[in-house]
Image (tube, rainbow, N blue to C red):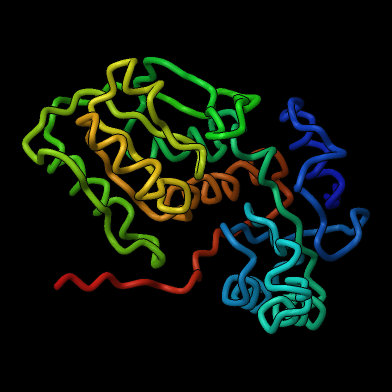
Length: 277
């Protein structure tokens, strides 16, 4: 039986029933939803290196988590008309490879989505509590429970941070972790989130020994320094590092649901190196 882009989208949206189809950013960037696909690539960002790798492998469809474009990138310059925007579309057109993204639907997709894949990637399988993310300054909560508190084997902040760094080293875009707090502090419970939906005060009040944050949302001024003033232990990773496990799991999930498909996870985002003086 053939599988179309529509089949994949309808399946994902059917489970992620909380997502408003009219308002979501989960869109088709290139291609027609009636197109039949046989080989699917998954990855965090539809950047040129990921798209080229998938195209070279003969993928009919690339599914990213993040969107391809973000409106204006500079004054009077739409992101589709930037050198990188044109390069992305050029790869898709030349390879005739369709491209879609699952962001809102995959963030809290059960078991395989960004939230659950990230915590299980860190061996955080004993779930203690869940809470919705609160948008700072927005006076509103996320629609789903983006944040989790999990119990872990007793360890220290330093040892757990080292474990996170080693675990994430398989992703080229990861360049270690930033740790703030007493490295000898005991850790028995860990709070994680969904990408930029990071744990904060709500998880501290539930007794989290450490919060695992992402740099794109954990601003030094408004998040990390205030939390440290409260004595909260912090581990901070790159945004993509926390979401790539979910895209790995998507590749596994699609084959389970659609056995006719061949899938491959791609992690070709530009690598980073941290220099310490």
